[in-house]
Length: 92
Image (tube, rainbow, N blue to C red):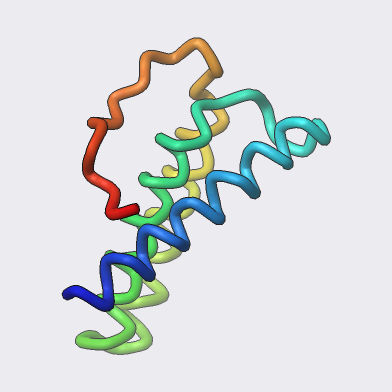
């Protein structure tokens, strides 16, 4: 896991920056970018498990069911939402 966590943390930071840029450009509504990035990485982790251990049918079923829920959820967050992200979980 020593190699996996830095990779995942780096992806999370990159997504956080991407979301912040998208908000500045008006492409997405204001939202807590760090929280959305962590939620997306968790979503991606679950989908990846299906790709690796399941079948393409199970992967597609889970993706089609969960993506609209995720997308709807982040569009209903706002920048004033209290952050629920615990500090100190990232390896820097």
